[in-house]
Length: 178
Image: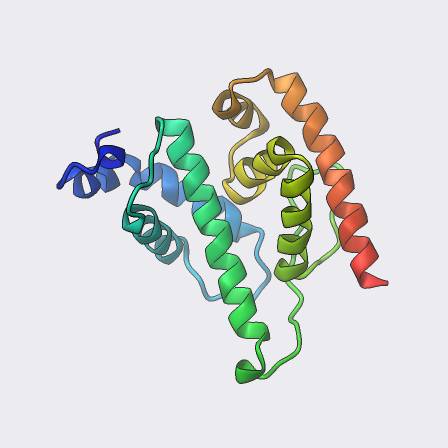
């Protein structure tokens, strides 16, 4: 991608090419957010895009890598917002955030975004590939098939790893409630 090589106007030319897809991903992610969430898909896309093009050396290796970076940026934005809301400066105490995923056969309980972020950080340390599946599927809004394509692996492998990862996260989040 020209933007990853630092070409001057490439970032300006990139947004119109990826905007619709980024907005679809943001809409899918925010559709699972709790009631009262004030962040709109357009605002999430714009903030994520600014973070993406603001990196000095993004080093994107194609479309899949760009959208993985976009999913990570969206996750970071949501985590940052949750941290701000949970801080003493903003009234303290953690607020519960719905984390159910419409395509999951077993619903995850309503959990705090910060708790999910901590669990994902542990998962990333143990198995970066499984963490990337969560980033692309849950935060990025990709289907399991699209996730498999982005990771250059079979859909069955991604489905199997998603089932394992979902169970791992459920266990991690349930343990934090106790």
